[in-house]
Length: 490
Image 1 (cartoon, rainbow, N blue to C red):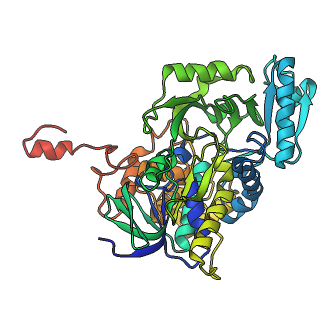
Image 2 (image 1 turned 90 degrees about the vertical axis):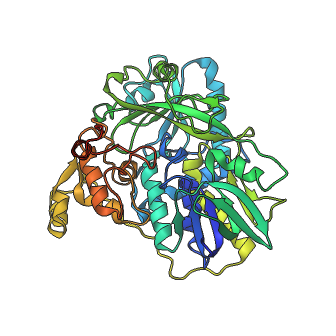
Image 3 (image 1 turned 60 degrees about the vertical axis):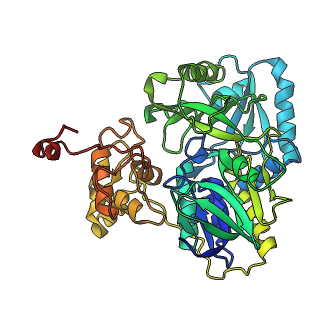
């Protein structure tokens, strides 16, 4: 049993929870992150559009609008501090009829009122020069130069590693099944035993309403909104130069087409409200819709270059607003809920806001020894040859390439396992290093990565090495051992 009393327990190790953890680690507080899965970045953060939105979409005066613009402004500095990939490529919202022009102009005006800089409408001639593959039906577009793309895995992992370096503890495989309070202390009932804290931050994603409803009479409802995507190979990565949006509707920003930070082309998402908050399957109908709707804004997308499809769940709240506040009838319980798009963009600002609430509740001192810097993983696709040679001199394993599609070395995979919190599965290695994301989709490199996991992680063996934790193991037994023992073949 964990007898420790934390000052702050943060439920959820997605980008919101880890952004909060990093900001809380600036304070003299004993903090932990409690995560249901076996690693960070296992929910909404691992399956989204990876867009850093400019901030013109959210309604004027909302918390969502304010934190979007604030988060966007923080991204450049944060990417330099934490060494994750970010590229401010700009976005275009495409209008395909004169009837749609007033809505596009209203989007621009809303963005101006929200404080988004540099917005302007570009007409067909300029739009064609900006995007040669723009749809023939496009007549104009709203250009937002401050929009960008990032690596959501890299951001989430970077926030977690920096928080851990500054003293935050991570507790994995610990789904919260109950929350209670006694004598001013919250107790979380988890699979790892009870966890006690003076303040609880609820960053539970699509399950945040369930946690909120355990402590408050004012009930909350979060709907899981599933979005399906097609990811194309790097051979298609230059088909567009900016993130290309449709005019938004009541279900969101529609199907977008964008380059990714890794050089691929990403198309999607759909938007379907579902009952099962863990249902991340893709459907034939959904993927057909991605293909059909994307053609409204971008022509000749080479879907034959698709390397994978996937879906993610957004935590949709009916008011389409972030809920970030101390719960009125549950003092010391702080909601960070309803964090759907533009939640990734807003995450740096969300972390600051929640840490401010924690500061008000607990009145801690600032830490003078806070370390804001974190070193990321080398990108061997872009590193100069002399720098790569220096890495090999320091560690020869940098010269052994394990993932050929994405050029990831043995040294990087071992480093991913040794960091805190470190990789414990194939997906953990993938989210940290980019291995397995290429054309073969882990077909070549999986066996060697599993071997390295077994070599690096205490008590890990091949029969327990997994894609993403218990229930996703790759090996069910040893054929030779079964034959020698006279048993059935595994």
